[in-house]
Length: 179
Image (tube, rainbow, N blue to C red):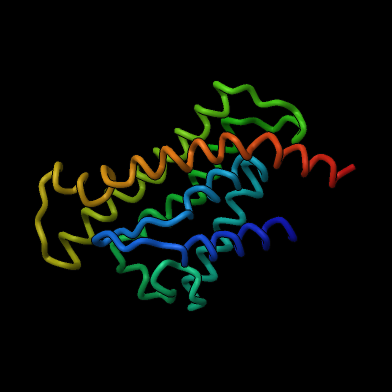
């Protein structure tokens, strides 16, 4: 419970450290989504992300622009929906081994890239349907990618590198706390 609460608190702080960029802001959230999967695993990581979503949907201002059920109509909500699944995929790819074990660089890199890809796979379709159905706008695939993915790739690469560098020390720390 403590780890889930801490993860939710970090996600909330990361949401409020944002740079507005069209309908989808830049934030540090994806860093903590990836780290939740790597450190908490494929069960507790998604539980933390699910808790974060529920808190936001019931009205606590944990998302980048606040919270509440109206957020379901936000163009960014698909990315948020991708957080639990991304945490699951990241945790599953890393594996259930002891938290102190070295993961292997290639496996860790694959897990982090896969988790990031899952966020885009959930976010971009939601963004498309939101813009089309809620806002009445029509965008081609290139424009959609320019709004919802391309500008974020350099920052996501930096967040992947940060998660890569933080993964082993965080897992060792968690192992030491369990002992």
